[in-house]
Amino acid sequence: MQEKKEEDLQQALNKVFEVGIDEVGRGAIFGPVFAAAVVLTEKNRLTLKQFGVKDSKKLTPKKRKLLLPKILLLSSDYGIGQSSAREIDELGIRVATELSMIRALKKLKKKPSELIIDGPLLLRPWNGIQKNIVSGDSKFISIASASIIAKVSRDNLMERLEKKYSGYLIFKNKGYGTREHLSLIKKNGISKLHRKSFLKKSNLI
Image (spheres, rainbow, N blue to C red):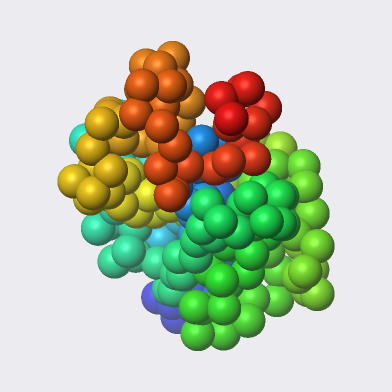
């Protein structure tokens, strides 16, 4: 009887899905903004917490890369979306970020009944239940997992783009507007993947 109870509890835990979504690269001056959505059961959330999953910003690049396959293995489903530098310039960063999130959600096999989103801003195009959690990546394992997937995916892309867009140290700054990056733009000019709307604010155009 005890075994049956435990089995029922385990099945119940496995049915409780948490769907977290997060974005990476919102503040960069080069390349796309990325988003990831992750679906986790209660059981696998606890397992990932034990593995050391937490806000991607609090992890080293090496640790993030080690955790990624574990997250992909233990997630019931996940999706990755991005929005290009051109879309960011044309639509503005908030709309482009929402677009990357919607693209990530569309890759899930099933539409989630409820979303938890990192940050204070509503995902306006989403017509389901959503909760905004400020600092959600340090409170919810599904959001932390999404932040790791998005961060590693975007960093990998930045490392690949270094070959095509050398001269900006993209592999090092990951497209963010470091002082070094900004001085290299002054020296080498603006590439096709630089966000011109962001650079206008920095008076580099």
